[in-house]
Length: 293
View (cartoon, rainbow, N blue to C red):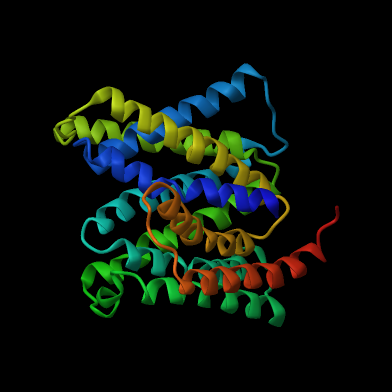
């Protein structure tokens, strides 16, 4: 449980770091290409240098790896970055908080994992925790204004969630999250870089050293530490619980804003934090009762 909190604390830095990277003039697709290719190369290099193995056979799980690569990485990141340019971050965050419910449905049909009444209560309480943050945000008035891009936000949310459910199936079959993420990220990164070079959509970079520093930072914190950790956690926890823990990210984002940007923390933050923690605790108690420690 503690590791899940740490992982989501790291994930919460993604938007801030990538926003700073985009301010250097790089295009979103080329940024994704750099992030993914570097992360994938590092993961696979680590895998082969240390002679790591996995119980699952690649041939038998190839379909799952391809699906995770296409949906969990490529579609989720590419469509997500495109949609974010045409809508507000608060809306994207709100829609992404539907991922635990989508995960619950996908896990039921794909993995035969059922959600009992107490888990549904935990999901609902956790999701409610984001409501005060959303309504009290400076962008709250835009939530009621829906456009075509707001409905398109469901695409990366579904793809992202489907990808993690697929990863849950892969690790249960003995596949290593290090190898799977390495292959998925390297393939996606190379494709994005090639597309950017062919279409001349790299951007005008104002400072390459600053950009490389930010890319390396997000690669280490998110793509290597966080993604691999979540992959291993899926051996113990259901994909739904992992998705539910993602509700902690807006909470950490608010804390980072207070520490680094001097943004005020108001009463609604503590209400949200209490609801999210309560929802996680209720769901975790149900998870823990079925985990053999």
